[in-house]
Every structure is written in C-alpha cells, then in structure tokens.
Image 1 (cartoon, rainbow, N blue to C red):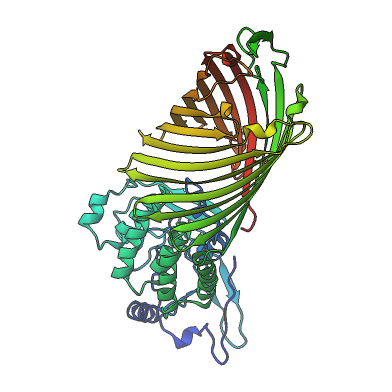
Image 2 (cartoon, helix red, strand yellow; image 1 turned 30 degrees about the vertical axis):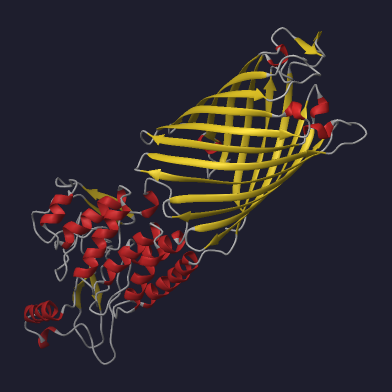
Length: 577
C-alpha cells in the first residue's frame, strides 16, 4: 500500500539540500526524544486468552456476540487504535501473549520489500528522492525482547497468516508460577494455556493476581473480564467492570463495549421471576403379555378353572405434553407448578384406551445438608370403557450427601384413589383405596461413569372392599453407566405382595400371595449426537428399553411371565429464554 506524503500549512516536509548539510543529526535527535518521551510505547498485552470460541466444552451464550465482536476486536485483531502515548500510523499491532511492561516492542519481518523512489517536484525547489513507506505488516504476535526467544509466533502478511515455528513452546507448570509469581510474561502464558485447556479457575486466579500487581494495566483487566464472561461469573465481572471504567486509559470504544457487557451481566445476575418450560414426548410399547395371562393360560373363577379369553400380544402408542412453571424463592429454594396430559391407545384391546390429566405443586428447599421436597398432586384418568378415576397424592421426599460419593434418600407418600361408579361399571368403586408408602434409597458414585442405586420400600393399600387390601415390600438395585456415547441403566426389582383377606370371587379358601421380579435395561441417547442439525442443543432424547416381569403366586391367575419392548422420545425446552 502506498502512503502519500503529508504536507502541513506553511511547512514542507522536504527541505532543500542547501539548507541541510546532513539529515543524520536530525534523525538521531528524534530517536533520542522518542526514547525518553515514549513516543513508540509498547501496548500491554493480555487481552487474549486464545479464541474463546475454541474452548473444548459448551459455554453459555451470554455476551458471546459482544465479546467476540467488540472486546476481541480491540485486543485480538489488528487495530489502528492508539493510546495517549502513541503517534505512529505506519504499523498496526495485534497483541497476543508475550510482552513486557515498559519495554520496547520488536517486530519480526518475514521478507524484505524493494523500496521504490518517489519523485516529488515542488515549485522553486530541487527534487529530492524520498523512500516510499514500506507496506504495513500486521504483526499477530509480540516477540520477546531478548534474542534468545524461540517460541512459535504467528504473523499476518497481506492478509495471510504465517507461522514462525519455535523450540520452547512447552507447557508451563504451576511450580514455575510459584517460583516466578511476578513474571508477567510467564503468568500470561500460563493463563492462556489454562484457558485453552478449559481450566477457567486457574486462568481467573492468575489474571486476578496480575491485576493486583499491575492495577493500571487496562488490557489485563479486559482480558480478565472476557474470561469471567465466558465462565459466567457475573459478580466478579461487575467488579472488574467498575475498575475498568475508572481507568483513564480506557478508550471510548472499549467503554461502550464494557457498558453493554455490564447491562447483560446485571440482567444475568438478576434472574427472571418465573421460568417456563415445555416437554413433548411420544413412543410405543410392544407387549407380549399385555393382560398378564397365566403360564398355562388358565385362571380360577369362583373356585372353577376356566381359560383366559383376553388378548396376549398388543401394541400401545402413547403421547404426552407437559408445562412447568418454576420460580426461585430465596437463594436455595424453588416453587414448581406442572400440568401434564397423556394419551394411550392400544391396537388390539382398545377397551384399555385412556386419556390422563395431572396437576402437581412442589416446593424444593435446603435445610442444612438436607434437600427436602414436599408435593401435592391431582390427576384424572378418562378410561374409554371403564369408570373414570380420580386420584390425589401428597408426600415429601429428601436426600443428603455423605462424602463425595454417597447420598441417601427417603420419602413418604399418601394417595387416595376413587373410581366413578356408573351404570356401565357398578363395581368400580370397590377398588377405591387409600395408600401409604415409605421408601429409603442409597446412591453410590464409583467414578464419573459408574454409579449404583439401591432402594427399599413398604406400602399398604386399604380399599373400600377388604378383598383388595394388601401390603407390598420392595427391594431394587440399579447399575448406571454414563458412557460418552450413551447412558445405560440396568435394574432389577423384587416386590412381595401379601393380601389381607380372601377373595371369594376367585378362590374361597386361599389368601393371595405373590412375588414379582422385574428386570429392565434402558439406553438413552441424544439425537444431536447422530444428526446435529436436527438437534443442535442435544435436548431431544431417544430411549430404547426392554422389560421382563416374572410373577410367581399361590393362585394360578397371577402366575405369569410378561416382557415388552419400548421406544420413546422426549424433548424439553425453555419458553422464556
């Protein structure tokens, strides 16, 4: 790029040879003046910790646009912005990682350009050859001031990035930082290294120490602010913003950027009063014994043995939709309202089709190390052929951690179920019942991948007609495998059911008692792992499961084996982002 010769009113940059015996003394004086008045002062670096869009894990979207386009524009990209000590317009610098405070910046040139002569003719003066200003080289890294620097550098020439390989680009250890806590260059390299590795705590700690050592360095503050924004730390970010705004070296462009970030940080710090979520779901189940037919396909009715006449194989399709409103209450509590709807349709035995509606209120809070969640729920089931069912439930659940790997849970639930007796089903209300259930659980995390869950439970059901009263004892064990490629859960549960009274409609002299063993395996995977453009946020989950139930009872009606395969999907999203 050619640079035009500038003129000033009443003065000429080009002098006659007769008025100057030599230009060397003048150049020497200018250089000496620049040295002591810091005309060519080095800009402090530190506003870049690598390109933040290249961090190895998902980061919050908050302020990313402003950060990328404004702060990094001033610090990461070539700029012509000058501070109060700069006056040169011939070279634009891009601050990278290596610099020293109050030291001279050395620019590495990759190739030399031929210098042309520009002839300028002025009336009444001799024509003097003036060197053409060399094309500006935009430097993408500042180099160490010593000749021993052999680290890898990157420069941009004519818009093309060039890499100058080095030999000392080794990882900086924390021991080196402890030995040289005031070495600005070494600490900035360490901060940038930790930022690229995703260790934001180390990056922030290092930059905070440098900020205390060099409180007037605005670029270090901007660097620290950019990392705090990426790490989603609004409180610390607002503190640094106040320090930046009080710095006299802050340019109007940087001030505008900081003000915009401050507004978004304040919005982030003050959460919304209510958050709203929606969830969609659907799937199907292939059941190979939908009506729990006995192993010999026979049953007892009024002390007589008769065959089962109901279908054994069937497929059920289901869909669901839910809305959740969540509000924070104080610092450690939240209140939730959930409304849901589900629909179930069978292919063969359509008499079991139904629609279900539910409404749940829950409150989550923390007392000491206890997380406690009381709830209240209502539901209504519209059966296509049977009586409608109304159910009310209430309970409380909680858990507490013990160490880093163990946690214990507990809960109590109360339920009341009522069936709407009508002309089509005159005995529906006989199964109206009140239930109580208590449970204990233990979770153990072996590592980040393997965890286990163990549960114990006891429940009692007291029905309107005594023949439906029973006690149930539950024991369950589950193994969870959180692989990077899928989440797999394998479970096995035992339920012992002891009825209290004889059911004369079945057998007059035997009280029913049975045990069921339920085994299942479930695999969950996000669709975005397979087809990213359909699920970029990876919040549409696919579930594939298999379940097998083996029931053994003292009455043949309840002695059966059933297994089923199911596939389902669910997608949740926030409505008021």
